[in-house]
Length: 299
Image 1 (cartoon, rainbow, N blue to C red):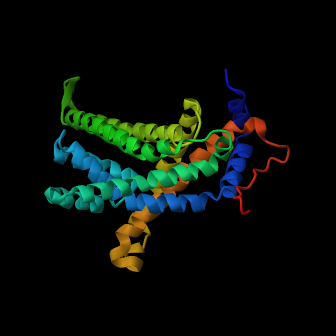
Image 2: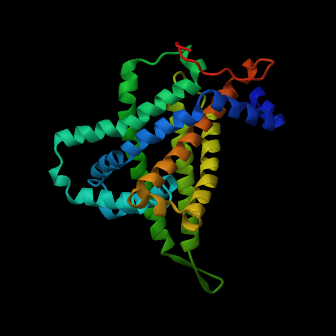
Image 3: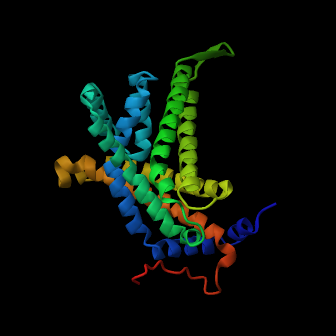
């Protein structure tokens, strides 16, 4: 039995899509995504350093870096090798890390989560007006999420390692030996996509204030994940075939491409949040069908 909201979307997909785009524009979605992408750029290396330092005591460094490199391609297509090289250099000199540097990395790694929480507050403004989150929860939320992200990467590393071992095996069927490499590759991709959906869904569950239905969060997670998969493959093709970014930016190429990838990813992440917000508000739409623009107290 479909809910009233789901029935409306299935009957009026184009109308819902246009409404979501208008609401995203009214909420200054591109501006919010730029802020999230900027802080994500500052945070991504310190965050990965913290995770690698912690997990290197549990799993083999080579296996850990291999897994990170594989799934960094999902976030920053064609630039994972550059980031991985920085992580490798850092691990070589990690005995020089002091408490000041560790706390600095922890601070910078939380910036993107803070910016994302503020952006979600704009998109889910109807929730903020009803519910208020205690400032201590907002202060500790990024660090709890970093811990959860580290545990998730640990589990993915273990499962990915098992699937790679499976890919080296073969089975005897009808008198012929069949390699399991293709099956292993498919399972690794599905593992990455499922992890992407779960990560996005968890963000939508945690970041907005108030209690959000897991079904609604899953809708946003699947929407953002599918859009990112399409965009990611187009971005890989563009950077490999048509892009002249290295000619224009020279030594800044890696930074520019990473920032571009994070910007696009942030747009799709916030658009998924907007889909959830509009899905929640279907019963409250006015006759004009026009979303209200977000305004500050000065507006």
